[in-house]
Image (tube, rainbow, N blue to C red; front, side, top):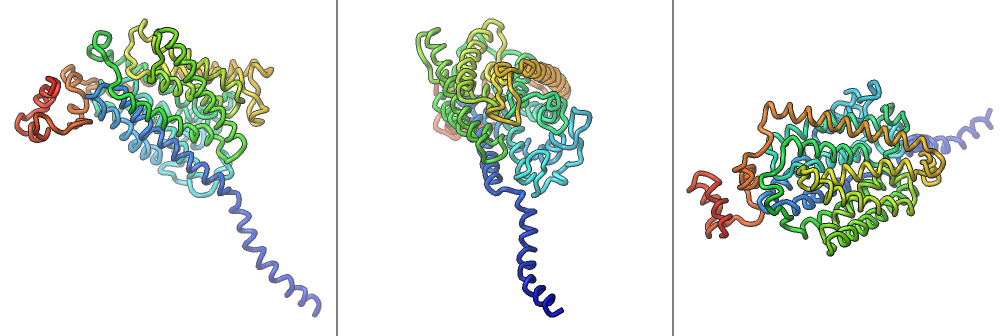
Length: 465
């Protein structure tokens, strides 16, 4: 009896020490390194929209539309951040409804907390995964604005963005990434958003450009970028942020993340080279705008494949993307005559399509054992699956965007008037000027108060003052 009591006393400190250890072991499912990596990656993706896309697009428009273009990215960051928390995340990643959409059980992030959700990532808080995916929803909506830049009125833009994110992005994200989404169950590979982000935004942008029509003077007046250094700065921020976009999609600080980082940089560099050389051969001079556009084309194309291919396929994907997107922008658009203002379709729609199909060619289980092999590694069926995912994304984005624009058009005037286009959307939509608050030596606000309208201010400025 005495011996039992003494043994129990000896073991008591071990039990007391073990109890906290047992609780700690349960919490250790969250890996702090992975969590830090994903939060940093989410911040990098945020940087891609604001200021990345904002400056990239803002430098490519004419001077009088600079602020209106930047404002679209800024406002989307705010609008979709709230939409995602309230209902967007639940629709995209919530419990499946027929393979098409998530339900609303996670409305307002109900049940989305600090513990992991093993269906999406077992080593990071569910809320961290939600935040990372939120930034994808934000930038996708922002990319579309490049197609209708300089001509959509702001109230219509707000309504369109909210409806598009809810009825196009959220369902498509569920199809591809959500548990039991039908394209995910089909076996479609999209590591970081070739279909969900780039095809959806590019195709939707094309439909918006067609519905709104061409800008006043398109084809007969020069519409060159007003500030290329601004565009290059935006492109550099996109390249930087894209490491979080693709490497972060590994959802862990792992070898796969390192691989995605390397192929992302490789494809961007290869596409910048091929775009520049293509225009150099065709026009006799390499351009800075070509280099910036090419690197973005490469980033777009490698996105779906970044977690499934090695460095040499990344070079091929990038080289092809640079040439194909260049031809789409400089040849196809000109011949067909549509006004894709900043080439969102030519770069994101076409680049995303090539990237999704290239994933079916070059995917290798040697890179990612959780994936599958592509055509060149003995699995031709994967290319067919990728084609189905591309076709479904094209059709869904095109049809839904057309319907949404028609619905929005019933309540808001979609397009700026000719007078508003001539004056510029900065003044007519926001009452601001990007580069000067002085006209004829007096503050703009003072002249406005004297004239009673914006027209005197803009007419004076356009007269050369």
